Image: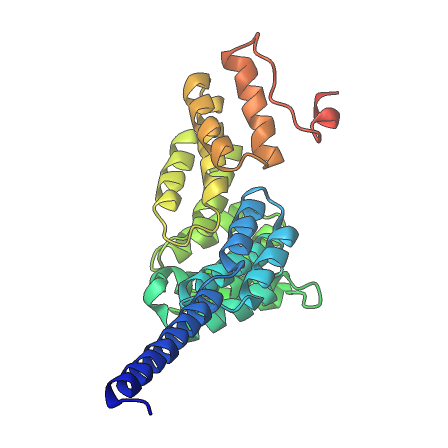
Length: 287
C-alpha cells in the first residue's frame, strides 16, 4: 500500500508536470500570436513606397494589415498611414481620405495630430476638386473666392487645387499664399510653391518654401521637396552641393528612377569621367 509520503510526492510531481505543460502552452501561444510576417510586409511596403512603386506598396501594406499579431497597434497605424500616402501619390484621394478619417478616429498617441488634420483637409480638398465628374465653372470659383475672403480660409486650398488643375499657376500661387496667411503650411503647399518659384528661376523664394516644407510634420511630399532642393543648387551651378543633396536622396530612395536620373546628370557634372549608375530601366534614358 502506497505510503502518504509517496502519495504526496506523486501528487506534487503531477502538479509540476501539469503546471509545466500549461506554462509551455502559454509560451507557445504567446510566440505564435506575438510574431508574424506583419513587420516583413510593412518593411517591404515602405521600400516599394520609396521606390515610387505605390501599387506594390499598397499590396504589401494590405498583407501587413491582414496578419494577426499581438501588440500590433503601432505597426497597423503605421501601415495605414503609408497606405493613405500611397493613395495620395496615386491621386486616389477618396481612398486616402477614407483612411485618414479612420486614423482620425483611432487612438492618436502614435500619430501627429496636426499632420493628420492637415492631411484630412488636403485629401478632402483634392478629392473634391480633381474628380473629373465634377467641373467647376467660373461662377463656382467666384463663390469659393467669396467664401475664402469672408473668413473661410480653407477655401483657398480648393481654389489652389482648381487653378493647378487648370494650369493657371499664377493664381494657384496667390491662392496658396492667401491660404498660408492663416493656415499651417504642409509639404503639399510648400512643394507647389517651391516648384512654382523654381520655374520662375526665383531660387531664393524656392529655397524658402523648401525649408518650410522640410520642417512640416506630415512628410507626404518630403522627397519631392528634397529633389527640388538639389535642383535649386543645380540651377545656381553649385554642382557639388547639388550632387551631395541628390546623393543623400538617392541613398534613401535607391530604386526611384527620377532621382536616379538626376543623380547621374549631376554625377556627370562633378565627375565627368565617372561611369553612370545604371539600372535595367535606364536604357531609354541614355539612348
